[in-house]
Image (cartoon, helix red, strand yellow):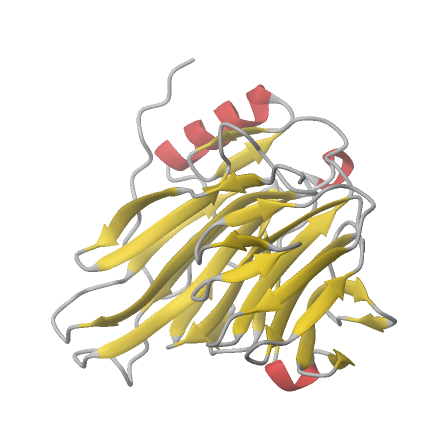
Length: 293
């Protein structure tokens, strides 16, 4: 029996009552394909008096990918983008040489009890594109391809290409991001769709090649081998990520990613000097931790 590489992550509170499980990066595995950061938040019902706003903060050298199962969030950024993030849609923000964004409670939900459950992933940009112009794209749920590769199996292609279907999300490098759902007791052989792949179930335990996997544990798959998945009596929702290995290792500090440490130092200095373009209509900003040369 092959021993699985399992990543359980570490849990912290973003705000009171909102737990965030950070699965990537981990000591045992820094990245899966170009995915260098994997945060799972919720599921939770936040009380009306809990402020879950994340004020203005900068990024460089990466793309953020936000996907909700429940709830809503309001995205604003320094390009002037204003977008309500809803379940099933993909929100892809390319930081490139630099962008500032906030993630806030929507006006409709502010002051009310509200559900929140979702994922935010970071993708490292290829070295040649780390200083590209920033951009934002929102792809509604209805525009993402849906497949039924087997009885009791439904699959949505969030980013990349799988089984002949391609997502309209404009990614900067080849990668794979899938939302797979299995009915209770259903089984499916997940093909080797990328050089590096991993799976994560936000809520349900399942079986992988007859080994039991609890919910909220990432499993890194063996290269070039199909993996047999089987749902338990509650069914299964499984997120699949993958892609080619990074072209070269990246450095991460706070919200900045780069292959060149000096680029991160420059971004830290620029944020401290209030040199990033602001978010139109917003003045709050999150202070960076102290930079150490």
